[in-house]
Image 1: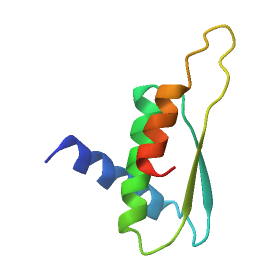
Image 2: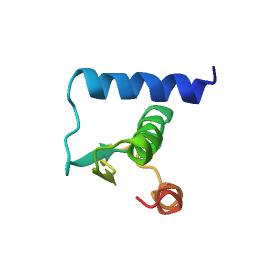
Image 3: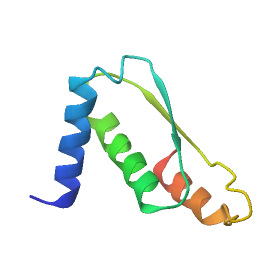
Image 4: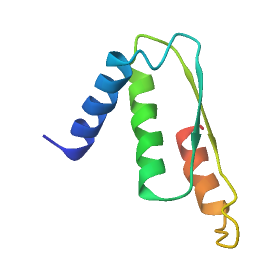
Length: 83
């Protein structure tokens, strides 16, 4: 089984088991540009396509103090995914 399928299955199971998403929810995902936050966003985007429960996704960045990274590459990533 592919990594993408494994991740999506685990995210879907957690959402179902803990009743994490309800119809009409608007979910904010903090995106740092790292693997973790981008993987979570992509998993939720895939889940949204397959879910019988409609929900919205928003992405935002958090200023990380003195280690500022350019936002432009992440903006392109978000635009490509319609977030």
